[in-house]
Length: 150
Image: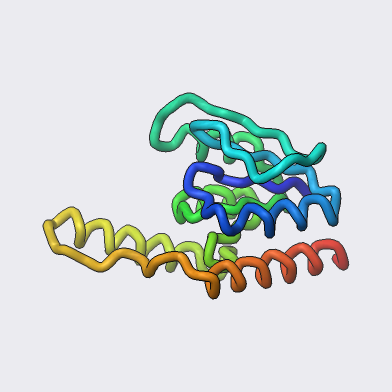
């Protein structure tokens, strides 16, 4: 299993959590972003900088990801594309996306986008918190432990 990190919007507080997991499990990791993003030094991490553009990093991740890989992203359309390839996705707040919930999450995201596009002012997501980081760490640990046991 390879780990892919959509690096463009990765909260800094998640970087040490990811680095510890990568080092502990010797997990081959690719950080894909429009600019250089570092989560720390590790021989298991490869940073890939792609051309500027809204979805360039997403396209590269989808191109590289294989069945069983894990992608860390807050981008629901990217998570949907990854799951279509039988890979897995966890968002920054610890939500594990899979075939059981990705279409519903995508539909809600698209509905909210339509509402905003119509001029309605909506509240955005709550500010990222320590609770979110804790949920992420727990979900990542649970997922990686389960993968190692399977």
